[in-house]
Length: 109
Image (tube, rainbow, N blue to C red; front, side, top):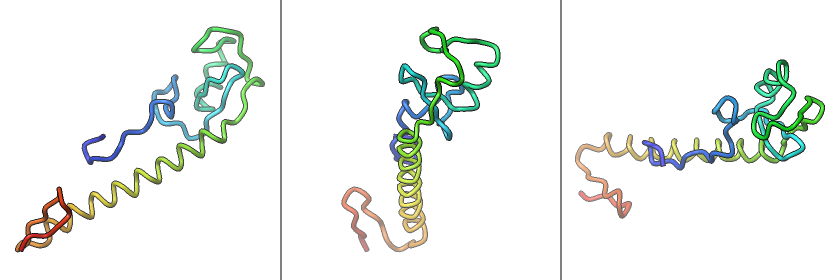
């Protein structure tokens, strides 16, 4: 969980080169995924996988649509959870005569 109580993004959603969540993931023949721009830059000066060091060419990369959709789904889910948490916090601060029992979800007058 992060500081807002929202589950963290899975480590498999991060590019091993940039350490950021992928937006346009591609997959090599060995099943490793990378952010497209990052692996293309890597392959400008190298001809091996950054993970296995086996030979790798740009033409061996294919879009990883399943991973991209999973990342997009998770980001939307996290956004909804964050908005819900913020709404709960906002409601708690805008009703000065009420105490919100966050554990049980009730309001105590």
